Length: 147
Image (tube, rainbow, N blue to C red; front, top):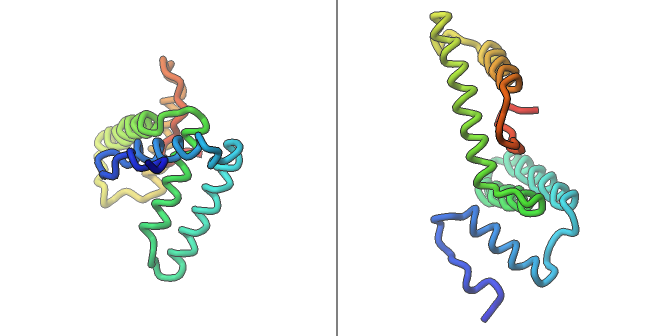
């Protein structure tokens, strides 16, 4: 049997499969030496995605997949479950966007009447409020509009 043959090939959990594939390959030494090396790979893959977009976008899905695979390997090296980290970010996004919605309604504003600058201001307001609330969980997962 070949090293990766017994890992499923379905799309039901591609994030889990990426973790399993890279962890299995790491058992025979096919791995980055440290998290900084994987972060360098993330930067490389991001640059490849940008180059792809700059030349008309052919191969965008493949380049995006490479970037996602590298990011999942950052999580593996940090011993962070990427699915859990992503769900925490989803929850933060829902909470922050809810704040934006409530503030919009309180000000009797419409979405089409709001500028991106105003929406970002409300988003940042939500972040500040979030940081002043006590948290019972370690929050290593950052949201889509974070630093």
